[in-house]
Image (cartoon, rainbow, N blue to C red; front, side):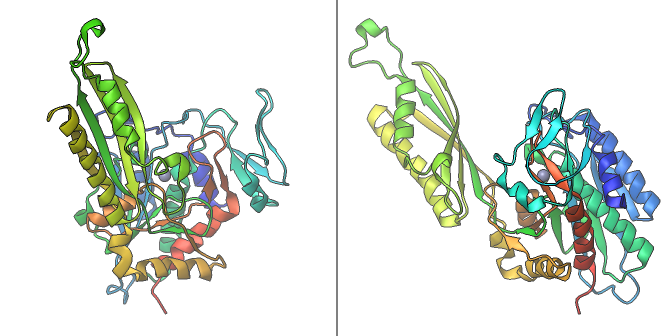
Length: 404
Ligand SMILES: [Zn+2]
């Protein structure tokens, strides 16, 4: 078994599930323990200036002699796993995939069916790492951690020429907080890559622009027997608000570059009601127009029902990193060349979500996202492809080596 796979199989045994409800940082103490473990491993490999802060791990490999003027390149992955599925007691299994369905758990009859995941056909003849059907795998993003760690080991052991390489492992990505405590200045990279994508060859440099919207509605409750002309039913005002949004701009009917308003939650009664939306669009002007529309609707309904009926809490969450990368496309091209050097044709797909890199890019660290070789994230059908993970180590080594 190659070093990257050995590392991965060991890392996934450390439970590091993050927790949405927690207000402490990191959100779970298990991440602290894993961060310390990774810091020790970096030190043992000979990585310099290894330090931790609240489950963020940083380290550097100084430029080899003569390459000090090369750009300082960062490699980043996250240590937590998604709270959507259990990340405890993970029992990874290495299987040689011959096509068809994969029996994950004989006892409980949990099967990964080719019919449900037709893209499994791409993996025929390859070794896959799968779960036992009761937990997620944690390839998101321990595959990235193992690949970066192994690339660091190779850089130091093989004496390959490179500029300064900066390494970071971050907590709480899955609850959207991975960039919060990231020390961009201390990290010291000119640009970076998160290694947190899916199948080999993926490069993501476009994400959504994202906003969070809370709609607070103050109604006027009167005994229904004598409510005529007096009652304002907050729930009905909420339904009216929603009906004024374009029906088709909904996650159920959108794909590719199409944005949406997504109603995540709604609660209340006649007196008060609350609606919670997220707003998404790749295009900044369409994104701004969506935010304007909800304000116009609120204004209109306040005109109908009284000025304080609807109050909006609208805040931006992150922006499309393309805005930052558009005039720094050499960063994307560098990764594309590295994939091609490893015999892989790169594919760029717009992310219908955000990555830590979206936030980091706007914090001054341009940061596209690269594949890990994993797939089916956040659930028990998650798996990682052994040769793809091994190839990613080579891709990372190519990325940090000086250009022609
Ligand atoms: Zn991830």
